[in-house]
Image (cartoon, rainbow, N blue to C red; front, side):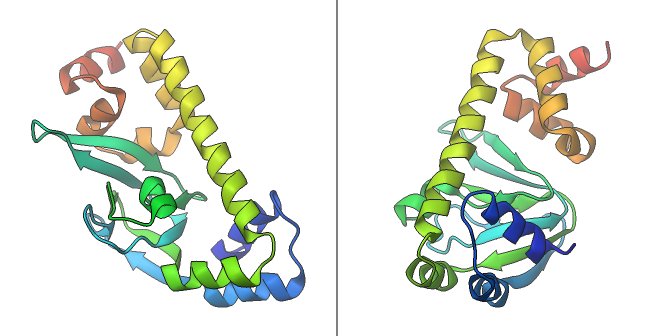
Length: 190
């Protein structure tokens, strides 16, 4: 099954699609290949595409007030990736999204999304439910991390983000976990 069909399968977990609606989604999706290190989104940009990651690994990040680069999330294969806050608010991107390895995506730009919102009766419901599920997963992950010690947090990360654990640079994993690279090295070598 290709990426377009995988995305339609995800959408159909939330809403029922007629064949004409599936075709509209298929026609709206554009292929995009990103080389490792390339950005899908850049902080401060007004362009906020939504991508379905068919293959590869991506991360979202920003710089804090001290100028430190903070990894705020990882996008694994088979997941939708964007700057969720900017997508919902329609403003400038608050995060950058970077390819951590060569990535193949299917993209919906803002025009395509508006078209789907207006032509598919249940599309707004899909967006609302999908976003709610993502936020719930994130809250549950953060809640578990807040109750865990450093080693347990790392174990949780390994279970939840297997692909990122294998391919993301260790300093980005440490940043995501809110620990130093030294601490990550110490607990991962146990």
